[in-house]
Amino acid sequence: MNTLFDPIHAGELHLANRIVMAPLTRNRAPGAIATPLMATYYAQRASAGLIITEATAISHQGQGYSDVPGIWSDAQVAAWRPVTEGVHAAGGKIVVQLWHVGRVSHVDLQPGGAAPVAPSAIAAKTKTVLIKDGVPRFVETSEPRALRAEELPGIVADYRHAARCAAAAGFDGVEVHASNGYLIDQFVRSSSNHRTDAYGGAIENRARLLLQIIAAVRAKVGAQFGVWLRLDAEELHTPGGISLDDAKAVARMAEAAGVDAVSVSASARITSGVVFTEAPLVHKPGGFMEWTASVRWVRLIAPPAFRRQAGVNSRSARRQGRASAWRRCPHAA
Ligand SMILES: Cc1cc2nc3c(=O)[nH]c(=O)nc-3n(C[C@H](O)[C@H](O)[C@H](O)COP(=O)(O)O)c2cc1C
Image (tube, rainbow, N blue to C red; front, side):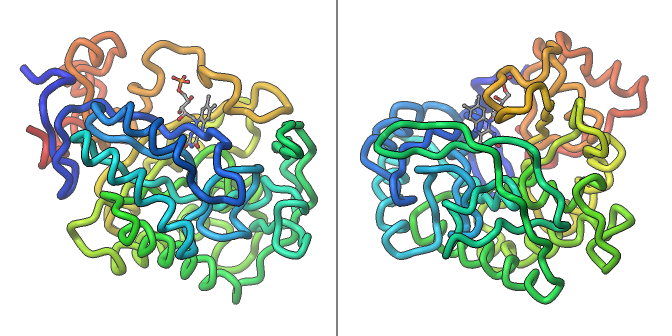
């Protein structure tokens, strides 16, 4: 019987165990440059089978909070190297979470004080964090402008470039952050995407940007490098948020586009503040496991005891027509 402590393959990545550290924004990177404190922090956690880093901006435009790291310049690549080297020296693996916040930003964080960008000019009505002289404060996000169709290849190119930078910095892979209300999720959600072009309307259109990003990243980094996806399966208390049916459809299309694994997440608009500070996001034991099984795609699986607790062991899943979640793990040990 496999346990959390048994090794596993995810795509070409061999992980010493099945514990994956979730991405956690820390705001410890002034000027968007990773710091020695971050190298210490990640090396201390390298006994997990895999670390997913805090969300990391793919471009200046992709930034939405003060002091979060980036991965688009030579200086940023050089600053990440001690982080990946420290984790590898301690026997761990690390992938960087690639992030474009879209409308969840503030003009003070954008190049030239420009408006943040979004699929449609619809405000996020949430807050972000600005840090001045070491003092953080929550501020309302700024009114966004709608991206023109001809700008979208540039966003795809920014992801491709960031993936190349990730490889240069020594990461074992990337995770495309497509959840929690950020740019890609803003395209996938019908409430924030009112476009009438090829990127709006049916779910295939709303997922188009994501699929183009995955395909471009995979083509850039090759088959050996990890390409993961973080996707919300539910967005609670979010009218027009992604539904489980949308998530299933997007996961299937993402598989065809070349991702190695999907990290199934969920978000809940509990307050008007920054939603993920309200952890745990979803007050439902095993809720993430249930959604993960429903999305029918798990490469990294939890041990049977956890599955039983979550009510998604393979027999009950089979009864509910969801068994392929466990069978579609060709690399699972
Ligand atoms: C302080 C904080 C920072 C987070 N940063 C990120 C992030 O950078 N990227 C991301 O995908 N999720 C982020 N999350 C969400 C977590 O990865 C996780 O999915 C969430 O906290 C739910 O797990 P929990 O109920 O065990 O807290 C963050 C959560 C917290 C509390």
